[in-house]
Each structure stands twice: as structure tokens, then as C-alpha cells.
Length: 249
Image (cartoon, rainbow, N blue to C red; front, side, top):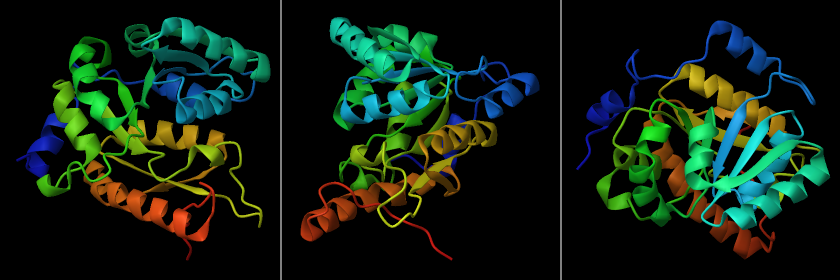
């Protein structure tokens, strides 16, 4: 059993191990624009999947350098070339290790059950980095009173700057951030590292969603539970994978 406070302590990077951005680099990232020279290097583990490709397209349009990581590098190269043609962006199709190594920000976009072994293998490449976990365990960790991202952090075994995000967003909405009624979709995110959260919030805005800060990483326990309900409601309403959670005042 993983105690929340103990796990949070393990996740907080020490000054020696954290790969923190300088204030100048933070400003460059915050001011990143389409075609700008200050884009972030983003590695997407599972970048040939639907979510991975959708995020890659959105961020490539904003001048970020994208490393599409896959178990099949040839497939990754094909996807990278296709997205580069669509967006005019700078993308590379690579293996998973290279994507993890090259990314300043690394997105975990694989089936949840495939993550633990991969994270153990890539621990040296991922140590201290910002990791955006978009995976969903679909009830696999409920009995442990934890979340998918907390279990993934435990599997990694070294300090990293984890942020859970995009868990409650369908892949079909990544190129439709505003619904048919003109309402901007929300993206809920959480984490324990404030700087990492600010950078991820900027990446969320660049997709076109409104970032909603849900607090510390343990809030992902609630986000995980929202996903099966969203899927069931989508099925009942015949929404064809288009529903979104929206926070209103």
C-alpha cells in the first residue's frame, strides 16, 4: 500500500536531481508562438496512437520540436512525416528511448498496462523530467486508494516532475477545442510541482483547451474515476466520443 504523504515526498525532486528550467527558459516557453524559436522539445511515448498524434499536431503548430516515440520506429517516422506535412512543424520519428531522452517534456501516451515495465527501463532518461501522464487505468488501481499516475511514478523509481493531464479529453476533441455551441472545452490537470504545472498549463492552452488546476497529484484519483463515467455517458447519449467535462461558476 502506498501512503499519499510518503509518495508525495518521493515525487518531489531534489535540487540535484530536478531538471528545472531557468527563469529565462521559463519566459521563452511562456512566450512561445507559432513558428517561434523558443519551442519546447516534447517526447511522446506512444506518439503513433490517436491521442499522441493529436497532441503532436497541436504542439507542432506552435513551434515545438516533437519526438514521436514508438516501439516501431519506422511507423513513427511515417507518422512524423505526415504530421510535418500537415503542420509545417519539426517532428522526428524515433524509438521510445530516444523520445524519452530528447524530450524536455515527456508525454506518457501508452496503454496503462504497458507503462510500468517501460518506465523502469527508461528511468535514467526520465529522471527529473516533466512527465505528462495522460493514461487511464480504468479501475485497475481503485482498491489500492491510489491513481494511475501515482502507480506509474512508483514504477519509475526515480524522482520526476509528474503532471496528470488530458485524462478526461477524447482524442476526437483535440482538433475541436470549442464545441458546436462555442464553448471552450476544459482540460483538468494536477501535480505537486508548480513550475511543471505552469508549463503543462501553457501546453494545454496551445491545444485550445482551458486548463483547470485540480491541485496536488493525488487529485488524479478523482480524475481516474471521471473517465469511466464519461465513457458511459457518451455511450448512452450517442455522442460518438465527443463529450467533455466542463467546470462552470
